[in-house]
Length: 247
Image 1 (cartoon, rainbow, N blue to C red):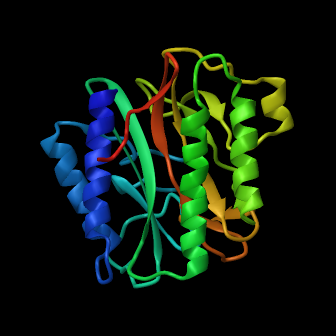
Image 2 (cartoon, rainbow, N blue to C red):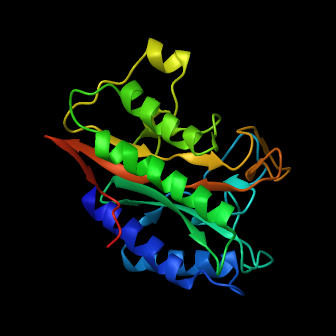
């Protein structure tokens, strides 16, 4: 899983360097596919099916711009512009094991509000990484994550949460970024060896979202911006290791 995580980190680092005004999300997707082939890995998202969509997901990356929360489809007509926020979600399978990570990138100069949204979302993930260790219940961490973002005036997407990860991209348990009655009723007790994909998605306005007609792209209902950060983390003695850390 460290090897898979390193491939994911390398691809996201490259795409972050490339993401600037005038670049299309299709260009980013092609580079991701080239790097996957060089690593002899498998792109996790490409070809995934959804009951809501007529077609399998066509890209190696999810490329979501501004009010797109997640599952944005990379295409030639989506040209990045100065002031945009671009969220890129990406995963691979290598040697039978998966890595999954996401980052949000500012395209050129962005507004102070968009910068604050990015910082709050990344900070929320940093809270989880700092708190994750054996013997802790996930609800304790989720409560601190939720408080961190809501104190900043933003809202946490409820419809999508993190997940366990291993030989499959999505494994049990579900890993929410907020405290709910469901989580408290069936809490997650962190133990050594557990590997989780923690992925807060945070909206500038309401947490309500909707899915576009393509069956994939999820957008904010109020049209305000969203940000998304994710890391695959392994619970180890005394804390956690970030398997998708970018250097």
